[in-house]
Length: 427
Image 1 (cartoon, rainbow, N blue to C red):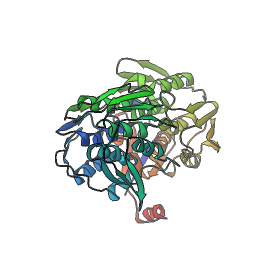
Image 2: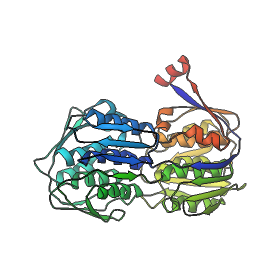
Image 3: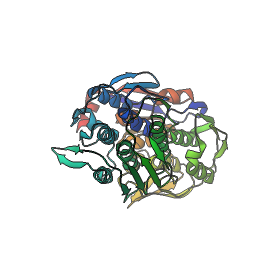
Image 4: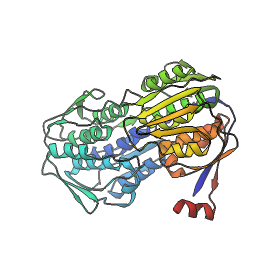
């Protein structure tokens, strides 16, 4: 098992290319199950979740070719093979297999999803949608069993705005008989991305990106080629890194509209940002002011950027308050930041950050994907060397992190953990 080593204090300068969106890729790959012929998805991020999903599709009979930035899926020989455990347990997005397999085969057996531990993230809205479409859903021995004689369109109101539930219901509904209407749907760009793929396959979907999505079921879906949108969370993370340590950093392959809430907050802090069609240029600002943020569903400030942004706020003058309204367990990085010298405390659903504080390199652990990103930001800011364990979380969402940061001038490398360190992790 590796650990990530960062020697802090080196300014960042240059250009960084943003990869395809993780949160799109993990839904688009299961969506390929619904086609009757070859599906090719490019601009694919090189992350561990993509490899896991490719293996899961092979497990159910798919002919899958995974290249550097491209995956080709031939679903012709796929069967409704149960996936009660194993790889399914390693990633949260495995739940998209439920909607896709239910839509294709009218049945599925999928183990309860894994992924980052961010507190309760129930899939009750997904199940509510499947049942409205005519499926019988049971939980047996830790796996979800989905069965339907046929799927029929329905009007489904989501009690909670949920990206996962919105996409999963879309996947199940595209081949159902009649019309499905999803009300109080999530509006994230990744939902539009999935709807674009499904439409290219022959689905009839209107309203993706609004709070009401209408789907008219079709008999069959054909293969197609699709290019994934840029990853707005990866882009946002590099924007935060550039604001923290950048002299002049150009962020390329980005849709600025998708990160408007972050642009606004960085400018409020005093960061200079130049925006063009598919690029952002961030200039160094020596003095940064504290700001308050509250995470909200899109187009509000993303919960996935709250943690790395908290690390940046340790370098801002004054008191900042970060409130997370999405996940109540998203402050596990705070103890690690305090270990590095940050003056920060948690009160309820908010973190209170008093800046500006000097961070010191330390041994820290990433408890989840975006906590890992927060520690990378802190490591680049800190004096001395920071050792980050829990690297498997970071590898789930950031493609070629070390290479990209080295290209900007960071001192960052991987080392094998010692036997003693491995024992400490296990305990």
